[in-house]
Amino acid sequence: MGSNGSLGYIFLLILLLQAGLTTPTFAFPPYRSTDADTADPDTLELRVGLVKLEHEKSDTEVITPSLRANFGLQNKIELISEFEYLPEEGAFGDGAAGFKWVPLFGSTLSMGIETLALLPVRQVTVVWV
Image 1 (cartoon, rainbow, N blue to C red):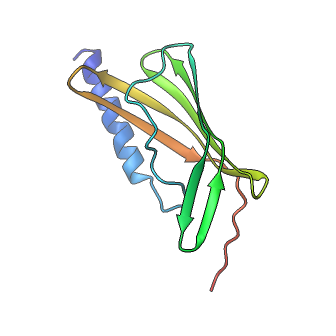
Image 2 (cartoon, rainbow, N blue to C red; image 1 turned 45 degrees about the vertical axis):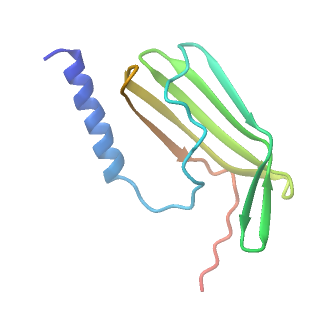
């Protein structure tokens, strides 16, 4: 068995661990701003979102700016960080860090995994009723 078979087993193990270890959490929604490929090795990618509005019932929250920083490593691996700033509160909103790995990248089919962990940058008040 070659290195491609070993990579397949590692990828499957990561997927099973990811699915088995997940728990419900307060988190921000899935990312719609990610790209399919990773940054080139030793390359830093920065993305700044100027304004994001979240509307829930009669409350509108302004989040600006949001920052996404990616750093490319060897073997199609990328380190990822995301942060949001809440100007009305003068504090950080949600923040996350993680990685992306794309072992299969082609013109017709690509496959990878991106995982993020929430960082404790936002104070949340929980009220039990």
